[in-house]
Length: 462
Image (cartoon, rainbow, N blue to C red; front, side):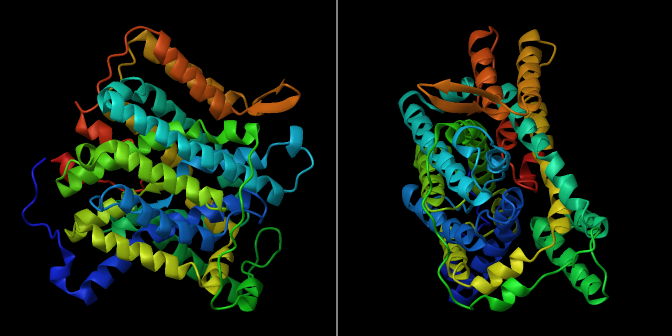
């Protein structure tokens, strides 16, 4: 790739104040989507889910760790991954084996334990990439497998979005409308942060409605500030140690297939945006190691999975400042913010209806991105093998609502629908003849593997 001469690659030439402002811009670009993950997971676990403070802490720490692993070269920010939302939801619904009599709060550490293992799977892929090369590895993980799996992740969460939105349809529709408007017609930074704007504007409406004495559909108050009122201004995030169980691991680990492909897409997007081939230098194996270990570290102490963020790639394109130092400043700001509990409690007071409205488009967009993955990689559905693989993945991913439970040496194990779908897709792709996918021949298709909310590189359209 050719370097762009008009980009700023050393932000120190701008001065410290401007560097600080640019760092804040990157933090706010990731903020809305990153905090939405623990908010959604809290809904699945009936208020006993992930902490916003812990999430922000490991977004910052994970980003700094990633930069160390990639020789300080890659201007990437790591935020919460949406890919594992379906896994969190499935763990919250587990009712077999050791999970039969658990509270929601007792189930959560096992979900995090599954993510620790999923993060370690990045290391396996990194080792294989280092040994045999990225093109050979990606030949066995084509879009005909990853695309339908991503579709299943989004669609499996659809009922949760409807349930949350139904608590107050006015707030839900406003949140949905704001995200759509700014995602389609927004300009500059407004287009980069549609989720954050959707949350802020609909929350402002909730304040007005609450002050006017309006209530939710069930008669409950729209807003409850008791938690924020009692929260201290400064405090340590509420970390906890994860736990391990084979059933939870089998829920989360297969999702790593989708999240690793998301990583490849984001690395392709950042490379195209900055004009540097980061897949070659520092190497895809290094970026995978950084992302995977950051994910495992986060989940080990009660945080969500991390992933490189398309939103921040958009900021790179917008600002024309490609210096990784700016990203590291954003990471430091995220860590600082994680030690302010009052902010976390204010975020936690967000009405479920707003979460539902945002989820309406978010979950649907995850599935739509799976479709885009297939379309932009020009998957040929006139071939029977492709039809068979996609059909089996979709039926497994959506049909086995309760998964398959069996015993191994007296231990109850449940394979969830996403795990069954991933296994079926990988096996069918390996045994059916006619796999002609070649990574790197279609740059636009490679970039489309990411799950960001906005276009990741406008230059690819030119």
